[in-house]
Length: 156
Image (tube, rainbow, N blue to C red; front, side, top):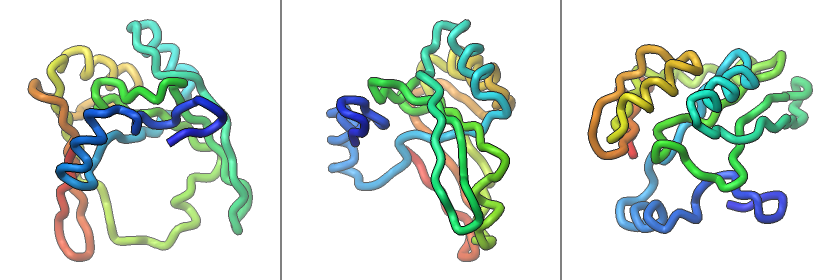
């Protein structure tokens, strides 16, 4: 999609991704990870030669008050490590889940696969995401959710 002129917020212009979605239907294509200090996280990745993008401030009013956050956004919308390296977000004083009813859905596991496993693992660990299982192979994201109807597995 496009916002603010030619700036892409997500790499949906990627022809290979579009073809895969047409063939297989909806699926995970990327993920977002909360960090305590987004400026430090982005600078840490930059020191590894990884451009996670600019840090943009955003907000929106809610019935409970103003929800604010900072998020890393690449001008080109590129999903780094084929979507396996997350976009980073730092929530303001209020996290959106504080005003949401309990859905009964919880993340049970996250696993990543990528040809450059060492670099992906190092990048994840650099932003505080220690222990995310990362194995070699074609790019792939898999999560498992516990839901009121049982376990659900989603993948890219």
